[in-house]
Image (cartoon, rainbow, N blue to C red; front, side, top):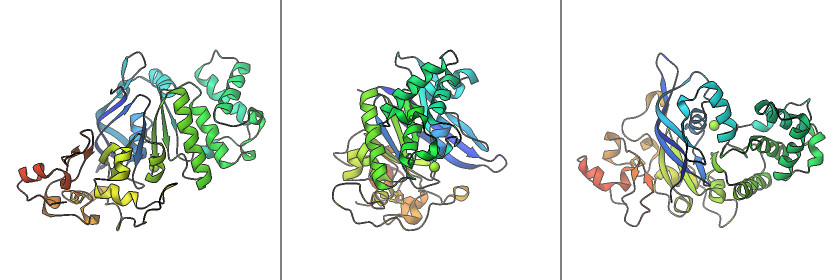
Length: 343
Ligand code: SF4
Ligand code: MG
């Protein structure tokens, strides 16, 4: 049964004011309670922008130009995130949704012990919590992410990169959020450390029951952890499907290329191919499909009509599977006056 905790509808973001670039174009995405949603795509495709816009952390010159973000609390209360005032937003940001930023592990203060830094994060949001209680909770949080609580007294430089990243995850979990958003949480780490972090997050999700948005350019990581995967390209979602379906049979040519760009963490090795060319300039997108310059399957409809994210019409596909590609919506292509290209 669908139990949405975060619903993003037609969210659009521009950068710049005079001649704005449309960096996020009418993106819709639903995160269900308890689910791990992977968000993948090359750098610059809008993944981080989506996360920051949905949590109202978008720095200028980013500007939300349209759409809706609704958070649903455990008791069913719905909050319109884009309309929250500052106080409600601060509360929401730690208790509803917490975010671990890209490169977060380098944002620890080098001159303070990590115990104090976690405790400060707690008391900043709960002014009535005593220092001693906050420190005790910091110890529990460290234990939760698999770090010996004795290390509360360590300075950041005494911890490995993977441990520092786990400290950031512990901090994000301090107020028991219902949604944890992680932007490239493992990117700076070696493969062994990546594995450990991914397993840790899966384990914590199991125990604590929060939902996760896991953002990465490495789609092979998502196969390990995600229930669903949304693939972004040029500011839009081009495929949104169950992780297993994306893995077994990606529908969008870009999703297929992305899957073959990274070695899997386990299982049979795939042939690595990568995707020719580079993402389009968002300030001057081609007509039709934004991916068509790089797509080996492009046909005449692709230059004329931009494909919408729509349920795949391929027989046997999960009805919840959505793809923005003319190959998978032959009826729509025919209705637009083009001959569908057979797969
Ligand atoms: Fe390729 Fe056309 Fe599909 Fe775009 S719509 S991904 S160009 S086949
Ligand atoms: Mg990013």
